[in-house]
Length: 229
Ligand SMILES: N[C@@H](CCC(=O)N[C@@H](CS)C(=O)NCC(=O)O)C(=O)O
Image 1 (cartoon, protein in one colour):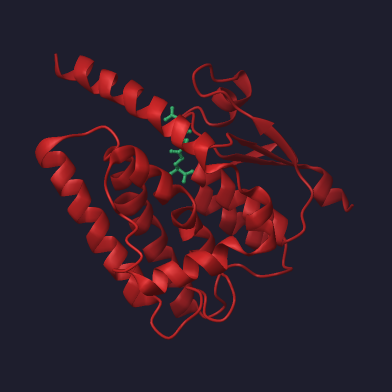
Image 2 (cartoon, protein in one colour):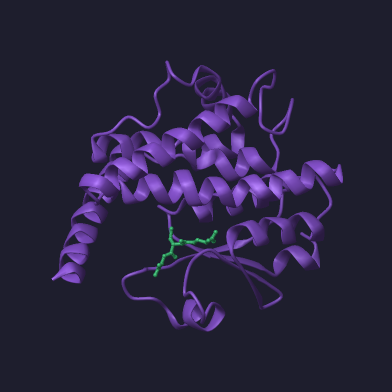
């Protein structure tokens, strides 16, 4: 193990898609790292000190220096360890990958999570927002096996949570964001993505995630109720 690699630590939580995408990149590049499971209901001083602004996971520590925000962490890893490049090489493709990644986080990831606890007009708005963005993704896959082309790349890793988390959200929220008939290309991509070794090895039982989202739904509904009192 190289000197650089010994000094990599990832602070995360098993249920976080933002954390898994960083872990996938570390594994794809063959970087050894230590993992710390954080409890978000009683955050450790490690997390509070490393990310005093947002106190969110993931945090990557490299030689003790914290790097924050999953998308920035992935870019940092890609620039620091050259093997198995993750970001596209062409400047245009890199620019567009940087555009789409936060867009999908804000629309599909945050929208589908919110659909777990909101109701009425907000729920309708979130359902439309997620469906519109899923259409965009379906269009991006035309003529390709992966968002990165013939092999997985940055956007596959960033969108990878969709292939695992969205079914559990659908079950708990009682919606159908991932409609395989409506999004056949995404459906095929999902099957391919789940077969990638580092992804397969990181999969956890779906019931565990469903159980987690049920608790998250109850907790978030209560918080929303308190906030509107
Ligand atoms: N934009 C951030 C989002 C990270 C995020 O939302 N993490 C959640 C867990 S999935 C978190 O740490 N939540 C704790 C909190 O909000 O207090 C990223 O990409 O890293």
